[in-house]
Length: 57
Image (cartoon, rainbow, N blue to C red; front, top):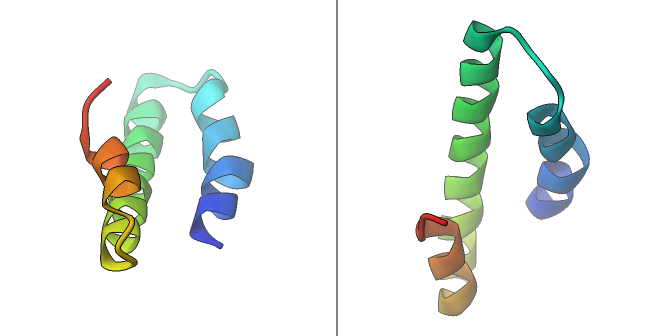
């Protein structure tokens, strides 16, 4: 459910143009959601998936 929220609600916000202070807030919130996704995957035993959330690209 969290991944669906991330894809449907968060990713579109990241792709839009925003003033710099708002952009920082959005990216910070997105990073927190990504961290939650990573820990959720880890807790579910999906370590390979979790690693992708924690590895910088």
